Every structure is written in structure tokens, then in C-alpha cells.
Length: 139
Image (cartoon, rainbow, N blue to C red; front, side, top):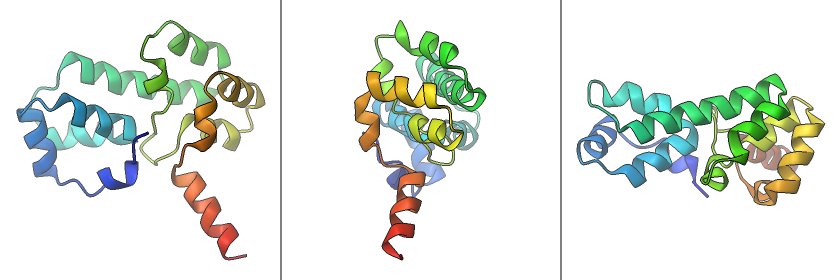
């Protein structure tokens, strides 16, 4: 899984270098870590591949579906995509994964569906799990 914390320390120059060098694997990890819009802003006028642009849109759509509580939309976005295991692990700009977002909004149907179909998400660490761990350690 992507460690989104490491990506926060990337400089704008490093991101631009990756775009110029067409380092798609590295850029994909940046996007899945919730930094797609930062990448767009920092890469400035440098063109991203259509794949990377579509990946940003896909991650945004997945998070929007969860925020709206639309299980059907989430299923449609994931069910027929061969990269669904990769996409379902994407973070938003705040470093929150889909499962924790569904828990936060109390969308039980989405939580149950995600856990039943993508059980690896239970172990996904994000900004919510880190905050919870810190709050429990201070208790």
C-alpha cells in the first residue's frame, strides 16, 4: 500500500522532474496517495499522460461516491475495472481512505460492502487511523 506520509515531503521540483521523465509508476503512487491535485498544481504546464489524468478523476469520483453515501455509484466505479484493487486503496487530499470515510459518515452499507469485498482496507493506515492511535495512546 502507498505510504502517503512520505509523499508529502516531495518537493515541487521533484514532482516536475518525474513528470518530465515520465516516471508513471512514481506519479501513480503520488495520485493514489491523494496528491493528484497537488501534482497538477506543481507540475504546472507540463503535460500528464491521459492515464494519470484519468486516475485523478477516478480517485475523485470514488471519494465523491462515498461522501454522498452512494453504494451503487461506488460499486459501478469499481466492479468492472481490472485495477479496482489499486483504486480502492486511494486516499483523498486529507489522507483519508475510502473505508474510513464511510465509517466517518456512518454509511454502514458502504462499510460492509468494502470490508466484504476489499478486506485489505481494514489494515489501511491513513490520517484517521493515525489520529485514533495517538488519541488512544494518550488515554
